Image (tube, rainbow, N blue to C red; front, side, top):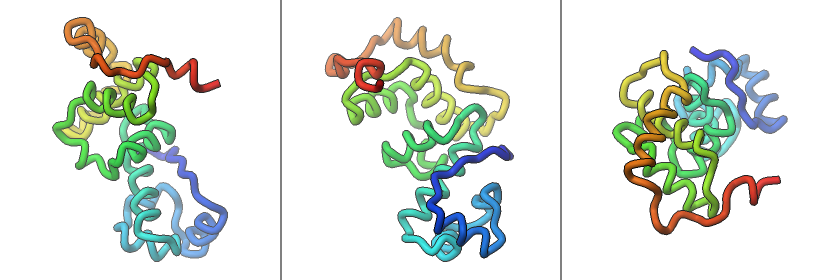
Length: 154
């Protein structure tokens, strides 16, 4: 298991974990209901924290992309089984309102593949060629946002 999981915990949540002698790496050992008690949080917050930790167990996926998956409404790897990385990218871009760096699609493809296979040997860049071939053949949706991420994010 990945040992460098990062979580956007509040000072109070960190203190609650410390008081309960729970390390961040151990978060996934608990159910959502148990985390709710350990963190003294709402069910939704416990669910979010658990999801952010679980998504970071995928090789080469960090906190920022884990947050993107939660932004799309996903809270477990199981929910991503049999999804389509290209369609997830299209959905993400629509929700964000701008198109993203192509490597983001590679990350979506990786997370879906990992959800389906649990293959720990692949990283997001393992999917670059697959994405390029797909987009060359299929292109992008006609309603894809016109602005790029680098025009929005400074």
